[in-house]
Amino acid sequence: MDRRKRKSREALRKACLELVREKGFEAMTILDITTRADLNRGTFYLHFVDKYDMVEQFEKELISKIEHALLDDITEIHTLEELVHSRKLSLIKIFDCFQEDRDLLEIIFNTKGVVSFQQSLSDIAETVFEDKLNREKLKLDKHIPPELFRIVIVSLMVSIAQYWLKGDKHVSSEVMAHGFLNIMMNGPARATGLIPGVYIDIEDIFSKTQD
Image 1 (spheres, one colour):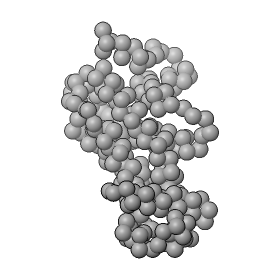
Image 2 (cartoon, one colour; image 1 turned 90 degrees about the vertical axis):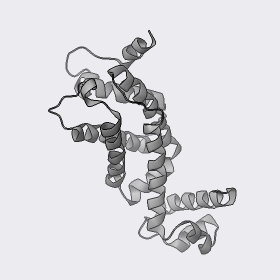
Image 3 (spheres, one colour; image 1 turned 135 degrees about the vertical axis):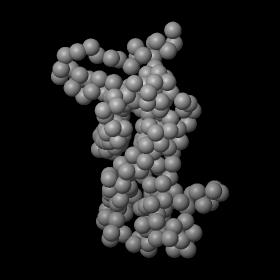
C-alpha cells in the first residue's frame, strides 16, 4: 500500500473510532466518516464496500498480526520447556499488538463484538494445537479435549485485551505474558495462592533451557 492510501486509511480508521464512541456504529454513516476524516466518499470506496466491510477488514488486519505472532519462529514442539519458551515470545508479540492497536480492538468490540473476535482467535489457536504441538510428547491429558484448552487460552487472551482497553495503568507485554503463562501452568487458584501446592514459576523453566 502506497503512502497516500495508507494515510487515508489511517484517517478513516481514526474517524470510525471517534464516531463509534460518539454516536454508535449503527447511527454512523459513510458521510459522517468521510467528513470527519476530511476525505471524499470516493476515497472511502477505494478502500471499503461499506461500513460493515470496513469493520470486517479492520478485524482481519488485527487477526493477521496476531496470527503471525503466534506462528512466527515456531517449530515442532517436543518438551514443556520448548512450549513455554516459544509461547512467551509469541504472547509478548500478541500483547504488543493489543497495545499498539487499541483503537482496532475498541472498534471491533463495539461493532462486531467480543464473540466474533474470540472465534477468530480460536481458529488460529486450533492451527497451533493441531498442527504445531506434539500431543503425545507433551503428555497432554487424553481425557481433556483440545477444544477445552483452546477455550481457556482464548478466553484469557480476550479478557486481557478487554482489561487493556478499560485499564488506566500501563502493564508491559512481558509482565502480562509472564502472568498469563504462570496462570496457565498453575491454574487460577494456585497462581493466586488460594490453594496450597507446589507453585511452578516459568522463570525456573527458562533457567533450565539456558543451562
